[in-house]
Amino acid sequence: MQVRVLTGLCLALIVSTAVAADDARAWLERMNHALATRNYDGTFFHVRNGKVDTLRIIHRVADGKVSERLVSLDGSGRETIRNDEELTCYLPDQKRVLVETRQERGALLGTLPAFDTTLSDNYRLEMLPRARLLGRTAQVIAINPKDAYRFGYRLWIDEGTALPLKTQLCDEKGNVVEQVLFANITLPESIPKSAVETQVNSEGLQWEKQPSPKQGAASFARLWRAIKAPPGYKLTATNSQMMEGSASPVAHLVYSDGLASVSVFIEAKSPRNEPMNGLSRVGSAFTFSATVRGHQVTAVGEVPAQTVQFIAASIKPEADAASASAERSR
Amino acid sequence: MNEYLRNQLSAFIDGELPKHEIELLFKRLDGNADLRATLGRYSLIGESLRTRPAEGPSRTFSERVRVAVEADGPLAGDAAARIRWSWFKPVAGFAVAATVATVALLGLQRLQAPTLDQPPQLAANDSSNGGARIMTGDPALTAAPSYTVPEPATASSLFNAARLTNYVVAHSEYSSPLGRRNVLSGIVAEDPTLLVVPEEQLAAPADPADHALERQ
Image (tube, rainbow over all chains, first blue to last red; front, side, top):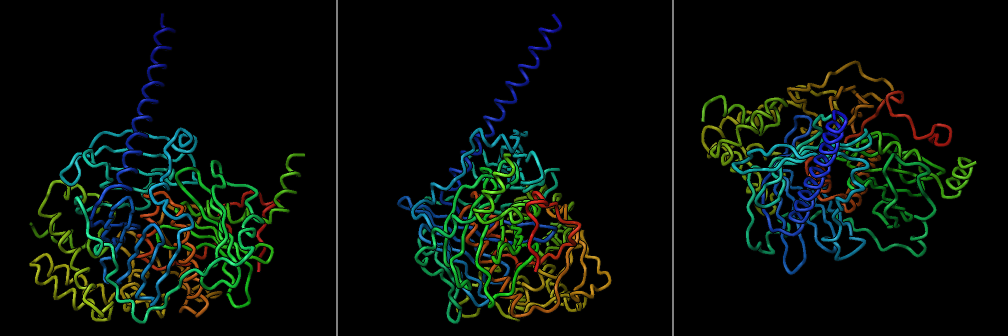
């Protein structure tokens, strides 16, 4: 009798955990859909290491096309404009404008990660109690990483709109690495096109637009791969592109666990360029650079430092990777 | 709004509020519409100043903020006082730290200024690179608890910072929506920081036998 009761309790626990994970997944899908498809205009605080930055985001969806403007409100004048064709970063304090052409056009709405069951290989989804935030009711969802190779999230998702009012990026121990809190957010029926156009006076700024890929550039990316990746990370994209400041094509490999992603950039070393080695941080992203077989390798991602280091250290020419793989299988 | 709240808010705006108080402030924001409105109003001041045509960021920005926030009442006046104070802080407190020639002064302040909850601890200069060693509490760097801010930027380090920014911009297209927002927020809010981590504090490579890095 006791065994039956215990078995029943265990089953009930398993079922309720699975249901909670499904509920959490449904909330995340709703949030992703809202982030991509709704018009919104909000001011938010970005807090990292006690440092607070104030930014404004304007997200416009019209005729199925998405455009988004992200503006620093601290006086630096920096802003990014993102649309179906390209991402433009205005950095007036550095006197330059970066233009990144989208590789797959028209796919902005199609680039959302799927919160499918494979996510649970690397993360544990959790429904936390509802909370009041900014005068609204929010469902709190935790995406807890199962190891130290990825960050997790705690999300306060507005019950009415499914937009995240507050987001915490957390390490595997639950420490908050950075957080975003909206001070205000509006959801207009429509947003004028002018609201997602830059206000930066670009006169005198240097425009850095990626040149068209050279012939044969595409095959360059296929010559490289990571012989080992952290658990759960898989190669999800490869391409080659010309980049400002690089004389030769730059291979771009993307490793993802379904939520976190790491890009690896590989380019032939040029005597013009000072070699880069070691760890750096650009905003929320860590980068790790190393020199491999006469090439500059840099891994970049919004992941813990050790993940970019792991992947950068594993990048090898395809031939080496194949022989290492054969060696391992013996 | 009482004096304590005004101080807390202005410290937050100025990036000087300790972490545990930030959480407290977030809780207060939840139940205080006036506080939220004031915070939002202040935040928009920066943009209204910035969007004046052809002005761009300049060394007189702090003065312009001061004038604008003083028009916003007692809170703004307090915030302005803090801005004036923090404007000079890098000069007094970070004579040793790096300067990046092309970075606007406000950006430079962000790179160098310590926060109250995690004050950088200046230790003896590292003679190998002339930098000041700074301890950081960034939990993302669990395997790498310290880094070095390099001495005055050279043309090549500026070039490398620009290359890293290019990489991060290209990477952002492959991030999840939340990840992308964080990455792009970081690009518009901060300058690249080179973290020179002692080798023994870095995580072990994937497979040391197969993946030894080629060194220069």
